[in-house]
Image (cartoon, rainbow, N blue to C red; front, side):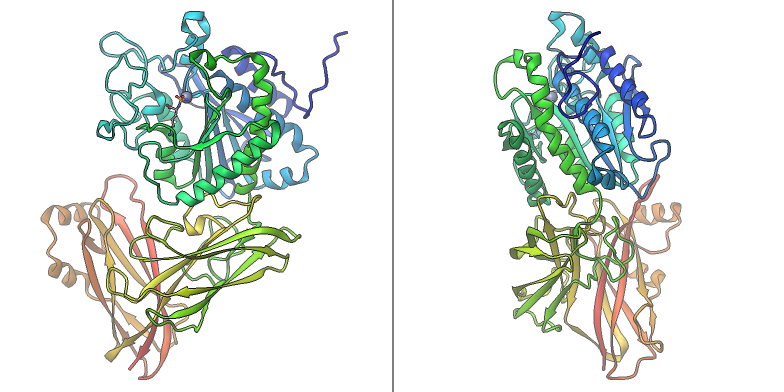
Length: 583
Ligand code: 0X9
Ligand code: ZN
């Protein structure tokens, strides 16, 4: 009888040697057959040479898609030679499944999630690199290129900033180059499969694409050294991840953007999905090309040190721990539903604000973990809601940041807000305060308010005088394409005798005189709202009927910009609360 040494963390597979592609496939099959009630294997697409790109789904309901559950996606091997990434991601799956039986916190997290492990994005390249010593350092896929060479760099083939050579970043139009970006964005079936897979996730939370080597923890942007929107959020998570990795074997992965690259995976994900996306570069720390094939003794420690980081992202993705409500009905569920710019947990004293004054900003932070959470960072920002309602954003201004303890009953944090002295860019007295709460064990993974229980906002106003019942609402089309503007005055909260009359959109449309092409497109797409060119602003008069002079109420206006594009027209929503006093 052969006695195998017990594996430290209950995993069932061995990490003593690099797997061949067939063995990597087998490893996934073994995990599935060992844990049939917790896993499902699916094929998300096929490579250039027709090999399946497989995903191992880990979930308590693996056979069905549950849109209420968050989707956490880990992938590896965009680049053929980076074998240690396959081992690491298989280990993560192996250990999650082993720990599930006894780890109550993992069980609680998993109840809320669907975890996807895609060990080999580039199966053709992987096989090719395993066929001979001469092939071992192949990087690209195996696309037969025009001119007779092979391969597209899959980490240059994603759609954001694809082929943008003007940036001077890594990426090439030359078929023979190792960083050849292909003939079009997503021209390769491998990246196309990944995009389609991500597009069909119902509640995407985060995305990690493992590469090697150099021991780095990369975050967007890749294509430029400028900060992306929400950079503080990405940075906090990256730093937390680095700490987790270092805590295992003392390897401190560097926090950097490294060299710039175009058409890179996490840039597309952050730009398109606004979910935290990272590129860890695994072991070893340095070396020449042979470092893509480190000694097999590196596999296990590399995998081990990356497990707690993966685990932490899973925990972040699984429901509210420390949270701030988006509206009174919000229990922390992500995404929240209903209005998201009316957080009851954000208020000022005095409640009616004056431009250029000083107020006390109060923030109620809730905690449903059952125990006091220390070192919770509470950040407050204000922003022009005409520009963005993400927190933080490139244009948000910090009000303050505090580190507090939050007992199970929650706590109120107060800070001084020096309010803006001027109206927002559209001349309205609206400014939005956004709050971001962070904790070592509960990080926000997006800047989008309704999609994170860690992010909330409240629109603040000054009293709007409605002389003879008329008020103006401004809206602008900040999309890059013409869009249909839909405006709605919400009835909730209004005195019963108040009626809000919207203007005649046909007459208003005539006043705007948009270019005929836009009108034609609008007609074709059967629009009913106002058609706005990119950058165009419109002031919409709303008439309040039935109100007695001197009455006052809050009025919630919701606006939607629906881009005039063929196919699925995804609306961008925004909303404002007006404090209206009728004179
Ligand atoms: O060049 C790449 O695609 C990645 N490095 S690798 O050695 N694995 O090839 C890095 C791409 C991501 N870059 C940044 N986020 N800066
Ligand atoms: Zn790589």
